Image (cartoon, rainbow, N blue to C red; front, side, top):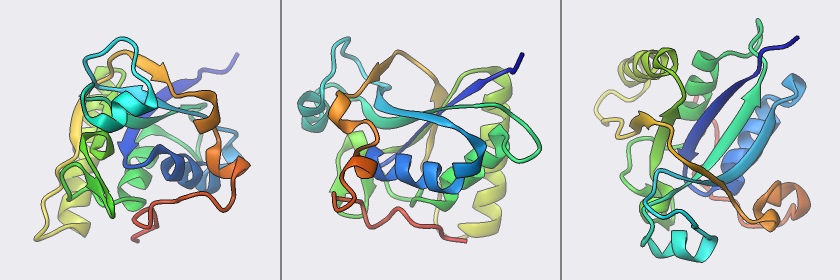
Length: 168
């Protein structure tokens, strides 16, 4: 029996975040879904989240089986590699609370790993630019509408935030 784990990240427009993780971890058979978390409404939808009225973040949930090629620390480091964690409520041209940088941990161990990796990445890659990523406990998750799931896979020419690229 395999032990799957869940990781939840917000790093701007969830379409590009999902595509980046899917591309990088394509051989690891991760399962991804995009949705909304961290807010104060029990029935968020895309329009209400984009309005800023719900305080939800556009986020990605990843289900994976830890092994020698994929683990939580590696996922957190990749999260930092693929977006700009130094801008508040912004990724490139996408601005608003729904585009904040956040790690939503699912256990005390994930919290410790997220804080440790954040400190390491700050020291090694972002001297002079403070990482503003929120590290908070995971709260209620709401799947985004079906047309958002695997959006860039279904729409290869669809909008992809230009700030989603590997920095190191």
